[in-house]
Length: 247
Image (cartoon, rainbow, N blue to C red):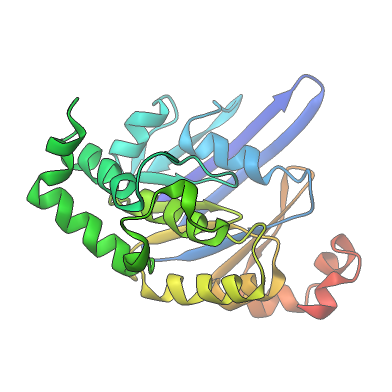
């Protein structure tokens, strides 16, 4: 569904990703781990088109999308939620979801009310709100809801574009243990044919949700395999300076 082939990216003398090759299957849930500075977010930026690799290629559903801009990749089914909220604070939760759905369905117009009133837009908005547990907050302005709800909405906005592949950059960043548990429940409610790649620092969550774990270190893949194999890896224990023992 999503494949990278030998991605390389440097900033001056700093080599941020080195020969990164991954293949994500339909419905697979892959967690990318690695210490700070390992190249995880830079890899995501190359996947969505915010950065163009110096070498290598990105393929979505068999198509080479390496040269496509962000918007074109999104239209082909590649969506992303960010570490930092990129929401419209002055609009309601429902309106944020509806605008994403309107863009996806081709109903986006200069008049927001017209866009959001379309039956297909309302259907997607309602379905996504159910999936990410946002029904109680639909009519609240984004500026009025908690940080945890905003994180849920970020994921909801990405889902409203009906992606083939969803990239999540530290979706539980800045939230407490209860929200982390809620995120696990949220993932279980998503369609199983949706392919998901997650950057995550929470080891417990990573092992809980992942079908596959990939570990980056200094821009290189140092591990790619099943969670149970990762648990027994002496290399990963060394990279994480013992924190793996508590995972």
